[in-house]
Image 1: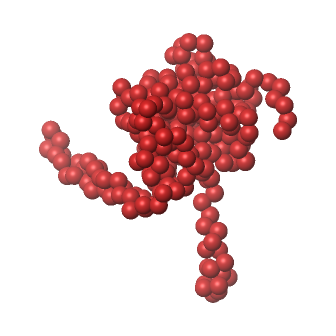
Image 2: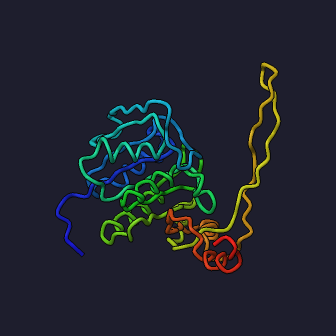
Image 3: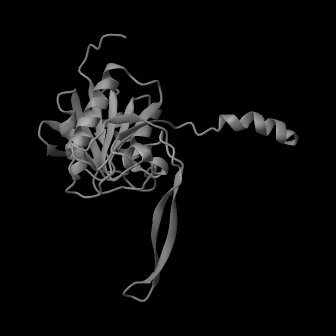
Length: 261
């Protein structure tokens, strides 16, 4: 492996907004590993997936949010933050992009809804090694001590031994104390989904509206999944790719649907 000749440039972003405790803890976890630049949404953007802003202006304002760290807040989505960072702010491609620390898990099917993971995925599309990290605790008073240690170890390893091109990592950390934490596992994404329902409500003006509620449904009991790891006090690492092609089905379709060829 070629010896690094410059200080690593680390792009930091999230989907909970630049004032969220999670990104503050992520900045602290990354200190000393390279030159840090933060570009994050100016408000919470959870569940935005890979949305981008079109049809309205994007605003970018420089802040002094984190001592000694160049920081910007963006009016757009997490993906917008990465796009603006790489196109308008940074003078070279980042060595790594770290997104998080998300308030709440992004394990299993949550990866496709997650703004945290979509920001990391956008960086990976641009050839930047990237990782999204989440803590299974929605509270703004959450204890991020285990999460800080896990993500720092992961990023140090990524800087020492880069990932294959266009691969990113989905890292989820359980809500546990250091004494309860059992370590890190490499996993696959559990086969699970959300079972939604929509509550009918009426606003103060007498107009109908709907509020989505639901439960997470996971019947995948295998011990190699991210859900199993989290339920047993392990942090999970799932390698993710953005090529959604089902390669196994290509030859099957060629054989079973010959009239379409």
